[in-house]
Length: 283
Image 1: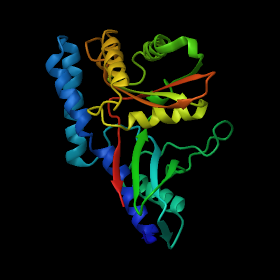
Image 2: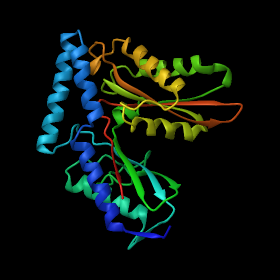
Image 3: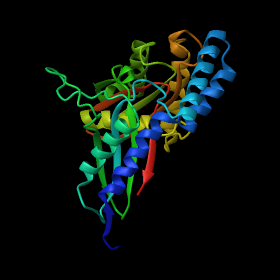
Image 4: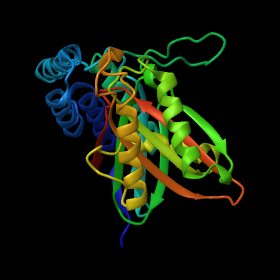
């Protein structure tokens, strides 16, 4: 396969569109889940909250304004073909420029501060982004992008379980994390669970899980069954839409896994609000 050149400006345009679209347009998987949840709710208050979410999402799309005022920190998962070179610039610079243009020209809130502890000055263009890159065979670049709001990010957690904890330990940690989060992450939520790898790999898996359509189950039936079980248990918690009670505390639970060490069982839970913004493109 011949080397393929992709212009930096093509990457920038793709990233710009991804972040504008994911902030203006709710995903079909989330929209369908909210509509279904409203049909199944027995609480009038919960139904009213879900109706408000549906109305809000329609207004955002019609007027091209953000679904939520927290337009998130830019997170990208990139599958970068090993036969691709970027001409007229670097890949990361092109991505950052796309984020900069989206958040500036798209009138999206800039939420990133340059130093996390001391001066905490706003960078004023929502850069830098968080970019996870994996080299894959081929001559294309696939980008999955999400704007991660921190009302839900702050409710996420990781735990280094021992292998003896087993599946019951995994379930308990996920349920405890969601119960502790309560109304704070703007339910109904999407729960991403990462199991395996190392400390940082589990967290990355959990984040990636939130960007997978909730209409797509884990390909391994054991984990698909665990996804369904956890979703059922979470929806019995009566947290409900906006934390006001009801049958719909979560819209979906997605699990991603990776091989791990014989002495470990890392588990991470990344919680996403009802917007769960994500879009993807292939160049």
